[in-house]
Structures are given as structure tokens and as C-alpha cells.
Image 1 (cartoon, rainbow, N blue to C red):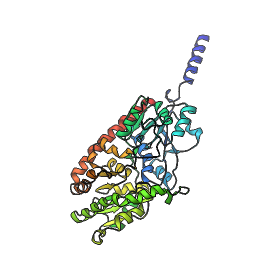
Image 2: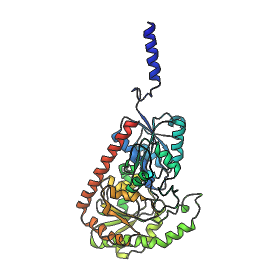
Image 3: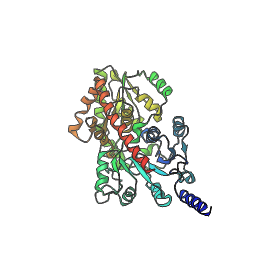
Image 4: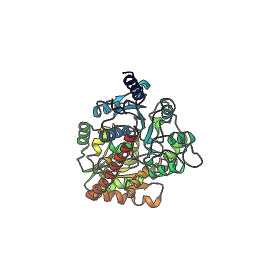
Length: 415
């Protein structure tokens, strides 16, 4: 009896040191560190995208969202799609999780929180679909030309995995000698975003005379987001404003030309709309107002910002997208809608993900004159041959979904 009691006690002690998830007593718990801001529908889209990926490929996991901000209706939008989701900044709840997953974004956005998790919670963590290449961003710290600062490299070194959303970032991280055992391409989480508000979208389309499958979406973008116009406490930056003013005509003249050619050569309409809450002004000033009057009749300009669910419900009813933003095309391709991307040096290298997913000839560098010359003909080709454009998009989407499945399989092994 004493021997049996000793074995029972010893086994109980051993099992007490094994996490409950490993004993099969509860589902694995993941804290998703995401939701960076609410002034951009792309920053909003990261979170529902990753949640949808986990729901599809890791349904047994319990996911807690640790956000920076879910204000302005974003929390309500998320809970409509994911009614069981726990959203909290309470560290007592967060620290009960088995794994921290840093969501998609520019760089290791929540590096301070990852450091606390690493040093204090002492549980595994991973990075899902970020950019880590400096491109032309003067604000990023550089370490020996590798593109990483020492603090970030130390955090990536001990990550269970590091998934980069564009090939240039992947190369930067590898060249920096990051020691994480898995460093691979991992798609931006927003590819899987599927939040919808069909009622608002259909009402908007009817008011603007937009018919399903008979319009293209176009988004303007300044070199530097003028957040001083909308964010309290953000100071006016004269150097960034000067660059915006210098390049705004250069960056939008071809988009206008494409709009004119679409109206004159096809039966499609065009919707000028925002991804960022600063862009309604630029849409009117740089794209809509300069158009000829006979073209304006079939061009709609959205004058109010929208949340990701309404925007996506419009995008999926469009014939495609072209413009200078990144997450609208990501959401489009993720939902089977063709999308052409323009970029410039002030952006991160995220746009180069189009090369990774097989859409390199739909990526245009506005700083490259030779590259620019192909933009308008490519937009027209997409508009005039929708079947080919959709087939090309479907192939890219299949690749993205396969990578989503593979990346989550890696996550499952490390929780």
C-alpha cells in the first residue's frame, strides 16, 4: 500500500509540472497580440484575418485578443464575427495563455510586450507575417546594415518561428543571422479577413449607382500619411508634408489616366474610396476633381471613412482594384478579387509580397519610370479580360491559403 501510495503521489507531482494543455485537460490557449490602430482598415483587417486562419486550421485552440485599440466600432465588428472571442489587456488573463502570437504588421510592432512575455512569463512565442526590411523608412534603426536593431534581433532569435510577409524582409532577417529555428514566408494575416456588412455595402452601392461586377475600386495615397490631420497629439511634420506636396501629382497622374481610359474604353464604373481615414480628401483633390466632366458621371467618390466589414463587402462585389495602398489589395486577392498594387520608397517593402505570391507583374514602383509606363495598360487589361484576371488571382490565393495551412501546422507543434 505504501509503495502504491508513493507511486500515486509521485505521478501526481510529475503531472502537476506538465501544462494542463499537454495533459489534455483543456484546449491550448493562444494570445494574439494585434489590433494596432483603427484609422486604417488594413490595420484593422490583420486581426480578423489571423482569427479566421486560426478558426479554420486550429479550431481546437482558444484565442484571446490582446489589442492596442479596438475603438471606433472595431470591437463590436470583431465580436459579430467571433462571438466567443475574449478581448482583454488584463495581464492576469493573458499570462494564463500557452503561447503569444504577434500578429501581422510593420516590423515587430509590440516588441515591448514580446520582451515582457519572454522575460517574465517565460512561455513560447512566434511572429506571424510581418515586414522587417527598412526600405526607405528613415525611422527604422539599422544594425550593421542588416536592417535589424539589436533589441529586435534578440527577440526574433528566441521566437519559436518568424514568418515574414515579403521576400525582402525574409532576406533581411536571414542576413542578420537571426537564430529562430524557423524563418519562412508567411502571408499577411489580412489575406484571410472575411468580416462583412452586406447591408451597408449594398445601400452604399445603390446610392452611388454601382452594380455588382461592373466597377473597379481605386485608392489614392500620399508618400507620408498626414496623421497630424486626424490624430490628437500628432505634430505637423513639415518635411513629410513637403514631400507629399512634391510627389502627389507624380503619384496620381497615372491613376487618373487609368480612370479616364476605363470609363472611355469599357462599360465599368470606378469607385474612389479610402483605406486610411486621411484619404477622402486626396481622393477628391487628386483623383476626382481633375477628371473631365463626362468621365465624372461614372465615377463615384466616397467622402466618408468606413470600417473593414463594409469596405470588404464592397470590394468582393467589384471587378478589381488598382491604387497605392496595400491592404485593400490583400483583402481583395484573399477573397478572389484581382488587385494591382502601386508602391513607393517611403513605404515598407510589404508590396513585394506580390512577387512572392505570383503577382509580380501587378506590382508597380512609382519611382521607376520604366515600370510606371506599364501601369495603365495593365489596369486596362485587368478591366477588359476579367476571366483571365480572376484565374490569375485564384492561383495566387491558392498559394496563400496553402501557406496559411502550413504556418498554422508549425504553430500547433509549438503550443
